[in-house]
Structure formats: C-alpha cells, structure tokens
Length: 265
Ligand code: IPE
Ligand code: IPE
Ligand code: MG
Image (cartoon, rainbow, N blue to C red; front, side, top):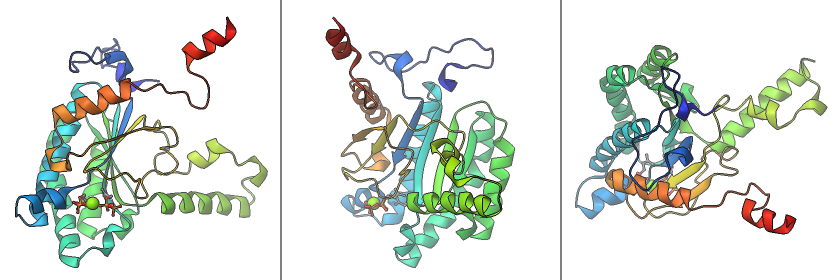
C-alpha cells in the first residue's frame, strides 16, 4: 500500500510538491546519508560541532518537506557503528545533541503525527538517550503521518549478522526449517521490517559511497549524490533530488516498458 496516498479521511492526497514534479511518482521512501557537517563548518572557519548543530536544522527542514509533500517515509543516517572511532569529544557532543534535540522536538513530532523509530544497536547508546528513544517510539507508534527512521549506532553489516543470528537461533530451537529461509523471512528479521525499501537514496557532500548504510534495503534504490553539504540541504536540493529520481527508468532487472513494447510489436 502506498502510504503517500492515504489521508485521515481516506481520500487520495494530492501533495503540494513543487510544480513540475509528478505528485503521483514521488518516492514512497527516501533515505538520506547526511554527510558533510564537518566540512561545512570548516569552510566557515567554525568548529565541527557547529556543523552538527546546523545539520539538525537541515534534518528538521527535510522531514517537514517530505511530510508536506506526501512522502511516506524518511530514513536518516545519524550515527554509524564506525562513527565511534571519532574523537571522544565529538562522539560525546553528538550523543548529547541527539538527546537534547529529541527532548525538544518530541512534542512537535507528536503534533505533526510523525511516527519516529530508531534503528541500530540502541543498547550501545547512553542510558538517557535510550530512555528518550523508548519514550518517543511509544508515544508516536500509532501516528499515521510520515514514518521517520533515525539510524543511530547503525551498521548495515551488523544488521545482517543479527538477522542471520536470529534465524539460526530459531532453527537451532527447531522452530524454523533452514531450507525454508527465503528473502521474506530474512527481511522480517531486519530492523526495517514492515517498511517498504527506499526508492531514493540521497547522499550529500559529494561522497560516492554507501558507508555501511541499509545494505539489504538499498538493492534497487535510485542514488542521487549532491555536492551540497548536509547543513545546506534545503527545498531546492530536495527538489533537485526528486527531479533526478523522476528522470530515472526503474527496470528492476526487467526491461524498460517502452523497449518491451517495441520487442512485442
Ligand atoms: C555527517 O557529517 C554527520 C555524522 C557522520 C555524524 P560528518 O561529521 O561526517 O562531516 P564531514 O564528512 O566530516 O564533513
Ligand atoms: C556516514 O558518514 C555516516 C553518517 C552520515 C551517519 P561518514 O562521514 O561517517 O562516512 P565516511 O567515513 O565518509 O564513509
Ligand atoms: Mg562524513
């Protein structure tokens, strides 16, 4: 089901997205690697932490735009399992920032009917942050607005290993026939279970890599890389990403419908 088309009244929602974009061909799910906070700050002669703070504003902006335009889900990469290798000061700053922002924004997330979830190894996070995450998740679980997934202490490889472990445990208990493990049963053990795969992946700051993000789920995502650093990501940059997305021909291994018609004729 396309959440994009669902409204509380049950009528299809024609979104208020920028003119020129086809509101019926927006991605259902946008994933974003929010990169370049540090370089944004450095270019301005500011400490990296200022870049992270500005990055929060960019995320709030992006969430609001996606929600207003009728995109069903936004998944943002906030902290990877590899980001612990950064200097302690930066890691501590980021953890405190996540906690403060979540506390401050909880009311407005609830008001906007956002359903927030945090994906990653949450037990590895500071206790105060874990508690807030539980509170935010429980408070918004029944909200019917945009699905907002924040990947925190997230690693795609770890997610896959944990899914394999869970299946193996079930098999060892005799609850699962290993020969019956298929893509659906594997997917059901992922942190994103129940969410449609991202249609569009945006990476900011010009880097052209996945950096251990959603390794399974991005199998057929369209990839848009922009040189804009994350703190500058705005309506113009999102609109460009969506135009780029709508210019693609998604074949999923099959044929372009136009080419297929020619073959048949
Ligand atoms: C992304 O910005 C934020 C996190 C990874 C937490 P960076 O901090 O990676 O910024 P750059 O890549 O150093 O510019
Ligand atoms: C990816 O950015 C992780 C997040 C945005 C949270 P990084 O800055 O950590 O990625 P690399 O090190 O450039 O691959
Ligand atoms: Mg980076």
